[in-house]
Structure formats: structure tokens, C-alpha cells
Image (cartoon, rainbow, N blue to C red; front, top):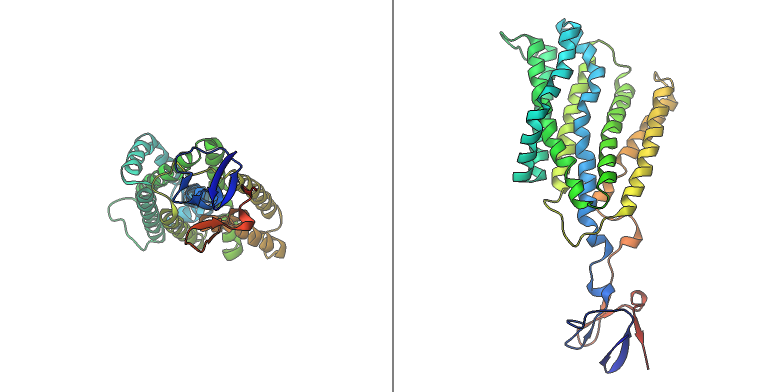
Length: 329
């Protein structure tokens, strides 16, 4: 117990280094002068939610089953040519992944998200234009042109992945396995959410050219999620930050609910079913629920501490927030 004097005697019921405890007659109170829990978890929380949504853009290849048949019927491609569009780009992984990592390391995760999102969205719009015939390919076969576009889309996805899957590790060093698994799981579930939303908006996908609209939907998602992530993501972690374990537990149960609702939406009748529409609406709400976590705390527990000023201008702890300082006779 360290006793300090300023007209009255205070007992500070905690162990503190002597240096800086008593300066200019001000009594040190950790709850007033130390950062609040909301401040110390702000950077990890923003990094996690930004990467959670930015990673959704990499799930665009999961939507190929919706518009693949429409591409084949519109351009008269063979089954092999159609399969090349969604398989050949993966051969670039051993080259594009290290380069994407270097770009993100040199210019920061926000630059990687912006560049990757812009590339992916632009090339998805180009694929839509080629598939619909709005952009003639000249001497190049349309199937080959789509394969080249898909390769560039994959490079953009590697830029997004290099930021979205590595940044959370820097902010959650003790829980890096859990945080990466949550971000990756959200990628797959986002593909299910987009597919079910497409069914509600446009009906069950077919080989008609209307299914190509899914490419435009993914282009909007790629641009929107990556630009949002770039605006929220911190450039570097802070040594004073704390890992918000409660946030990861909350998102774990949220993803379980999202997975259950997605499975239920895929099992019920999908044509004009009010139950299916309601389940898809629930999917959308669950998918957007982590969004406020990037902007501020949700629990009153995370509210910053308050202090009141003494008549002499020095800060003293509020009686409601200062149990560590006890008045002694």
C-alpha cells in the first residue's frame, strides 16, 4: 500500500512504480489516465472487420456455377473451354501470390485492397461485356479472352488475399489461427449469401443470358467491400493494443447462425416461397451485423472512463469510477 498526501491522505490499493505516481500534487488513478478498453481494442477490431468483408471479394469464383451456363450458351463454348475459365487462373498462384505479398508489404494493406478490388471489379465487368457481345474481341477467340480476363481477376484476388488474410495475424498474435479461420469461413458463407440473394431477386439461375448479371453483382461486391476495407484497415498494429477475445467469440457464434440459415435456405423451396425469402433476409442481416463493430463498441463495458476536474484544475477520479483509490484517516 502506497500512501500519498495532498491535504488528505489517500491509499492506492495497487502496486505501481514510484516514478511518475505523484507529480505536481496529482494523485494517479489508472482508470482515469490509462487508455480505456475501447481505445486499446480499436485497431484490432477495425482490422478484423475490414478484412472480414474485404475477403468476401475473393469468393467471386464460387459464383461461377450461376453464370457459367449462360456464358456457354451465349458464346457456344465447349465444356472444356468453359472449364478453362474457372481453372486455368489457379495455375498463376505460385507467381502471383508472392508478388501480391510484396506489393502489400511495400505499400500497406489498404493499397493492396484498393488495387485488388479495382482490378477484380473492372475485369468482371469486362467479362460481362465479352459474354454479352457488347465488347467484341476481334481476332481473339471469346473463350480465350474470358480465360485471360479470369486470370487477371485471380491476380486481383491475390492482392486482396495478401491483405485480408495476413493483416489480422498482425493484430491477433495470440489468436491468429482463430481469426484467420473466421475470415476464411466468412468468404465461403458470403458466396452462399450472394447466391441465395440472386435467387430471390432474379429466380433460379439458368442458361439464359440474364444469369450473367451475377458478374455485375460480384463486381459491385468486389469494389464495395475492398474500398470499405481500405478505409477501415489500420496500416500497422500498435504495441498497446489488446486482442478483443469477446469479439472473436461473438463472430464465431454469428458464423454458426449464418451457416445454419444458409443450409435452411438451400433446403426449402426456392420459387416464390415466403419462407425462403425470409431466410434470405435473415442471411443478409446476419452478414451485415459485424459492420458496426468496425465503427465503435457495442457494449457499455467498452465505454471510455470519465473524470471530473478539481477546483484547482487538476483531474480527480469520478466517485463512480474510482474504486482503486480509498480514503484513509
